[in-house]
Structure formats: C-alpha cells, structure tokens
Amino acid sequence: RMSLKLNIAVCDDEKYYRQHIKKLIDAYLKTEDVIYRIEVFSDGIDFCKDERNYTAYDIIFLDIEMQRMNGMETAYEIRKKNQDMDIVFITVMSDYVFDGYKVSAVRYILKEELEKLLPECMSVLLKKRQYFGQKILLEFVGGEREILLKEIYYMSEEESKHFLEIIK
Image (cartoon, rainbow, N blue to C red; front, side, top):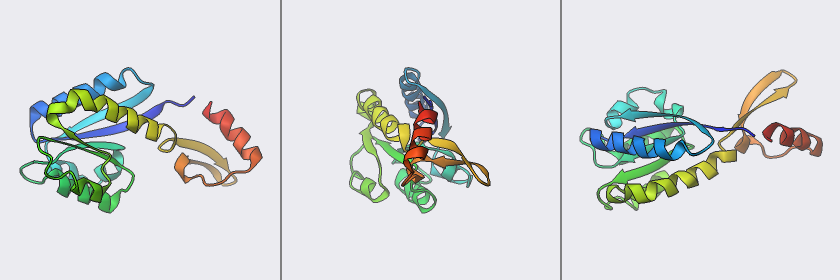
C-alpha cells in the first residue's frame, strides 16, 4: 500500500490564523497514513512571487480577505497555471461563497467553524487524492516514468494485474 504524499500551503495575512490552520491540519494528518509538508504564506503576493508554488502544492488553504492580494485573486492566478490544486477558502465572511465556484474551490470554511469543519474537509481531500492524486512509477520501453493515476484511462488485463500488485 502506498502512503499519500501531500504538499500543503496555508495563505493568510494574520499570523494567528496561519499558525492555527497549520496546527489543525497537522493534528489531523498525524492520525493518517500521509507524508506531508505544510508551508505558510503571509498573503497572495507572498505565494505568487515564486512561479514554482503554482505546481509545488496539492492543497492550498486561502484566506479571502488579505490586504495586498486577496484570496480570490490568488485563486484566479493559481487556476491560470494549475487546475489540479485543491483550493479551500477560509474566511470570516460568506460574501464570496459563490465566487468560489468559479475557481473550483473544494470548500468554503468560516474561521469561526474551523475546528468543526476542517477535519471533515481534510477527510474529503484525502479520499479524493488517495488514488487519483497518487503517482506511480511505471516501466516503459524507454525507461521508467512517474505518472498520476488519474492519467490512466485504459490498461490491459495483464497490465491491471501487475498494477494491482504495485498498489497493494
């Protein structure tokens, strides 16, 4: 059985919430079969200034109301370069909830409900990524290549037997 590897970003302009969200995610993931890394960013500009961030993270927890570059603007920038990153908005107000659909946000969590709703959100994200976000190393004639399971559309019966052995 493969354990899941996750790179998670937390982007909030309030230090308290950056640390609080990180602590909640950390507490949840310690109980799961997950290898993970959590990085914090002080706002959208801090996240977007490094091009590698657009593809380095599997999940981002984004505050919407931030001074220099808000979470919605940050989400639009992410979506220009990455359709696969899971976006979770965390905010104090529900004004932008419908805009979240435009960037395919997974969840919209009010800060006052973090302790209650974050574990359920993480559970959904883990289930989603358990297989489809998982990478597997396969041997081809030209050598080995790592591919995402969601990139596999068809395999022969013989290949599927070999594949099932790998993922056990």
